[in-house]
Length: 256
Image (cartoon, rainbow, N blue to C red; front, side, top):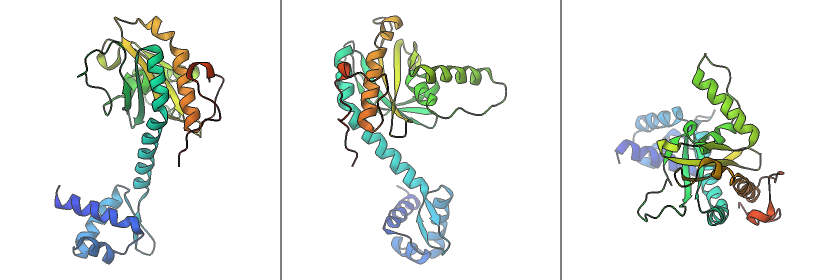
């Protein structure tokens, strides 16, 4: 690790105890005030540090935002795990959980389907993919506020129309994920504010399960997504179905 990065991270960590003056910041990393000021200004430019009116420095909103996102991602994976396992067992297909980060999806969890016979097959856990090119990504994009009008762009217009359709029916389908011959259906997981915090998906090789057959599993997927949403703190909707996933409205996971 470079000395500047090490100093910046150490300095940022010292702000966790509360606001500090420039002198205190310099002392915490053993450098001259001018060096500490350069580091603080760089961190401030990126939102990791905020300068108060009394010239002290505190942790910036970017740190809080990243921390909240990390907690949500870890939490939703833990909450979703038993429901994904049950869905995987019922349908025999690969089951995945992902979140949206900027314009990409980040896969948090994956359970291999019955066709994944290679124990050395790499999973998508930790991998990223363009959101617009995946069913699970479009479900998450559909949960965002519609973008404003832009210049004439047929691709953007087509995506906007597709997201509107996904938003209306509550799920998305794809027949060529990641340029691979797989079919996939995905549905959103809602948080307490009703917004999509993650999405779960069912996928299978196209030569083993045609799209029409996979679409028959959509009710199973919607049931699981609703159960995870309920456990995560969201409210059940008419899609919620107790007899498939076994969830109960009173069985909410603790988030403390």
